[in-house]
Length: 128
Image: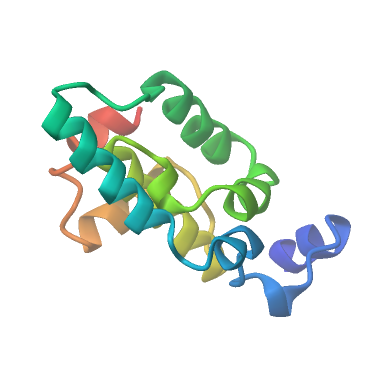
């Protein structure tokens, strides 16, 4: 009930919740372009630009403020996160939200455990 109230208040069209215009505009090439860029950086010995602290802040905002989740999903695909740990966390948050489940530390921890990824990301401690 609260989820539909949030959707109405935020004017979210339920039918378009799983479509991501940014992904469509890119033609799904984001991952391919990123892989090519990483290959170039590996060959040159340089590290691609990254902002791990910003990634953490985005994920934290999604956990603290449910209203931020659809806004972030609209803008950022999982591949936008440089750190693979953050990609896994983001995908779990995204899936919980799209299924209409609450998104908090408890549900996120359980979702990552269900996916057998909790230890991969550093355990529940990393989430806090």
